[in-house]
Image (cartoon, rainbow over the protein chains, first blue to last red):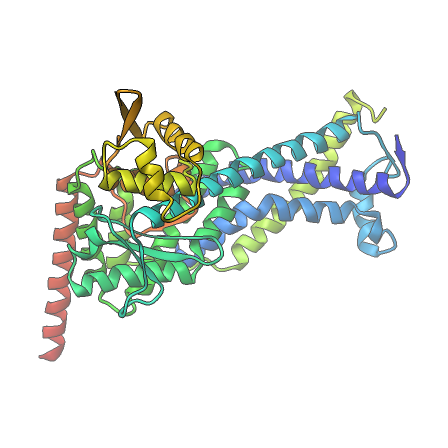
Length: 324
Length: 132
């Protein structure tokens, strides 16, 4: 049994975790309700919503912990909150209680996640190095410094690298595109590199892994699409949106025509509707912004609900299990 | 697919010189790096076990051949770069310009092209109207 400041810290971590789990549940339910309406808002609004939802459990968990924290026990707000919600036995903590089990399970899950994601990233990094070795990758060119050209007839272009993203375009794509089309592809990839999209996608993938699998896949797919929209829009500030859309369709056709025996690269990257979505977004962009106050007000409501649910859950579970 | 530096060099050599034994591979690679015959033999063994090489016995020695073409390996590697999260809808390390699902058929692409063309015409019409 831990008594003293360490017990306080462990209890605060338990509160944060309960807040995390409760808010993840609440946010999962609400996302299912709003998911179909999200697409009607502007790209930036969609991005903000996804970021808020995947980081929501962490932020709400931490804020719930702060509300319960005795650090602020001399403040008026703490006294007010304490009248409504409170945590018993702050200075006592037992590792073999349900509090301890919650912390241990969450830590194990997080460690497993880090190992799995980390090894996945390592495998990808290694494959990229091997690719550069075998494909006689040419670093940069007169027209496109920073671009790497892969000596392969597969029509592909992608940006990879977490902290120093690098754009790759294959010879198979270069040879089949006009100069203007190639510029569009390169500008699009450079936009990904500028926005550090591989890194942000990795973070989203990590954060969303705490949600149910299907929902996590939905977040990742939607966020990936949003990054494509943003890179497309960035390219469409220099080239006509119709030209960007036409290039997108042409590249899709080239990939489609490429014998699948040799590669199914990127074939499963997006669903069939994503190119359709991107073309539609280029031709008729959705500009309806969501006022920032809406998600902020929603998250505030979620915070109140989380705090009350944590308190209720704690009391309910305590009536079944005890700390000892 | 993890490939060590020596394995990469062995594979690279076998693409240009198929059907050689370990001594020949060692002789060639020792121009580039200091590796013992045993080390080269181990690298060949590993590549064989990974299914990247095949071998034929000739006398007491094995002759090695690349089992996979350079282009096919590059295709596999591009797949690996994009695949880990991709197949689960969780692409992270890669941001590709265009990726087309196998479900996306020519008709859908034709439809998109027509949509783009229609928009171009409408814009042209609008510009002409504005000029008048």
